[in-house]
Image (cartoon, rainbow, N blue to C red):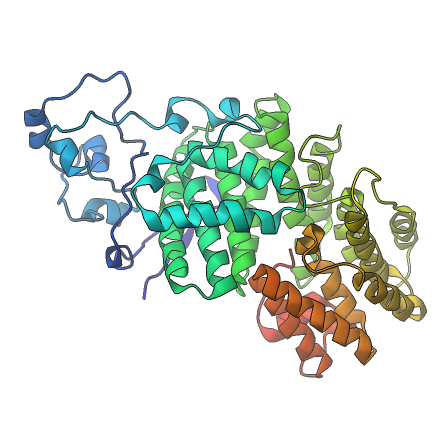
Length: 488
């Protein structure tokens, strides 16, 4: 069985690399022809004669390391042993039929400076020779990206920002292709897409490991691209419905990046403001909702970090404002603190202050009525966590009545799993549970996200009395099942 082993880099806590990957999966299909590699020849290199190329044997990586290459394909023994990216020159290239390929753009200049919020999209060279990858790319543009964002398709930053980043940074490209394949596989049981997704996961993690090695050696130019790639892998685990907490390992790695050299680049303005707003909102969304999946709840360090992250996006609105928060960014900021207060047995002054802030929230009028309904569902779910018991069922009733006014294909529904889970755990009446069950089933049919199915199964277990969580805690119920997944 193929196995990915995650290990910590010595100078970079929380960031990982691949120790070993079996090449058997890669040999089942035609390997990807990867042109974009740090070992490619620079643009200003002079053409090399075919005779000289014929004498240069081995992969680019071994040549760069000045090591003997055994020329085993698709991955030579040396690269396999050292977990390096192994790329061989094309046969046409060796015969002198083509010019040497230039170095990839993300090596030629820093991704931190060149990114633009809405550049013209182009099909990456990596996809032009592989129909399967091109299918995943198209599926991402037309289905996966639209399923994630709550903004209209014409202004979706998962296309307008994330795809250009991926064309500049190879690990991110593999990651979004893997995300698309995972989504396609879970949504329509497409086995071929799932296999292609696995291949891109392997290639993406290998490429990410290469960039992390450079990062650990002091080259921080690719820090922002690494952060983006890690966040996409976090989405992969959420959509996959991973039950081992892999999404939280990715989240810890992103936290490490944001607390280190990348934070200095942000402070100095090295990252485009609109791009930064989108990536920070993606991170803040995943971070805030992760508070409900940890057994002991968020600690003081988590709360401080969450506040710092939301400060990064507290300035003036950008064109991507509300990508995942919709009109409820101020509510998302309070979620970790609300979850923390809900773990306490006694009523405190802080609990009262939080309740007042949640109750005082009003939707941003610049968003649609459906977005406002989504925000109000979050508001009601948060009040269920911190209100006194006697008002709990009236909140559930209001939640269910409001939920029934929102079509399941509304854009904002893709982010409603967390409030639905909270309401499901608080629901005591069978008619309320039936509405929530039906809505979650329709969501899973429409979006195909694995964590929706997991939430539905967990709620049904609790309602049947198989799992009796302490104090109606989602994290306690997960713990009793021996699993952990993200409610994003």
